Amino acid sequence: MSKYTLYGTQFSLYSGKARAYLRYKKIPYDEVLSTIGIYKKVIIPKTGVRFIPVVKTPDNEYLQDTTHIIDELEKSHTNKSVYPTTPKQRLVSLLLELFGDEWLLIPAMHYRWNYDNSRFIYREFGKVVSPKLPGIIREFFGKKIGSRFKGIVPLLGITNKTIPAIEQWYEQSFLVEFNKHLSTYPFLLGNAPCIGDFGLFASLYAHLYRDPYPGQLMKKLAPNVVKWIERMKDASSIEGDFLPDDEIPETLLPMLSHLFSNQWPVLENTANRLSKWYEEQGKSEVPIEIPRRLGMHMFSFNDIKEERMVLPYSQWMMQRPLDFYQSLSNQEKNNLEPFLNKINGFSALSFTIKTKVTRINNKFMIK
Image 1: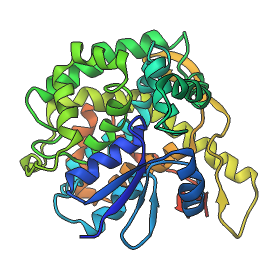
Image 2: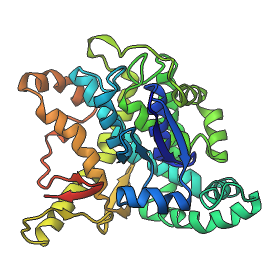
Image 3: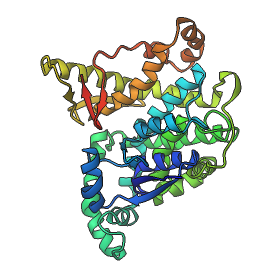
Image 4: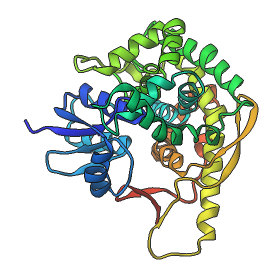
């Protein structure tokens, strides 16, 4: 059987998501470390962007962006789909992918860069220069590369003002609640991982499990989460099913409620800011590429207000659950209303995005 090639790294948040998916689906692949040489020879020439992971198919097609990679591979590898077919579970799985990819990034970046993981993580970054260099040399070069990522931390709204709220939520709410859920269920929606599991795995594995300080913290506070991560690392032997009757466990409601009270307002503001930006560009007959960052805006983390970057990519991820919900029939929406009211999501999902984001040649565009 022809193999795929995964270009990524162990310490890359989204590489972990793609790797776990490939293993779960039993898709044969080889992994190539994304060194600086690989960026120059493969990733940039073949994708036009500088982001990993990238998956090369047996047909020599290069797929970039983990969500896009998964969606493309689902078309040709239909066994054990990670997308539930029932309305409530499908919606929740998309919401939790959005939550894991975009919101758990906040504690992931905080615990990686604001605690003493420096020797470990700089040596990991140093591997992209040359994995064969001695550790101390890798650390030296890794610091030069890693410092750029560390500089993003305050731009994500992670500051002395918000850090106490971030830590309190992550340690006393999120880990506790997810640990409780996993004491009953192996995965989010039963006995098989959904796309939401892979979304959560992204931040929880590469940063919050592998990095020394948050890894020890997770082992202490949430042993069931550790076991879930170890299942997710290679779930190829899992042959289970999602829960019957479109059931959503009550233990997931706190996570979903936090999404709608904290993350969703950021997403709505992002969509409004992007729409305004597009209007300012004037009418165009051709698609317009969107900047990766679009200034700053206020956000609230458990009632603590701070500024953070406006990230248009987040709107593309928001569109997935929103478009799915808004495609449902009136009867299906009525059936979902009691559940959505429990998590303050009913009115949120009526939000209208005026300016849609689309992907063209691995770039985010408005057309």
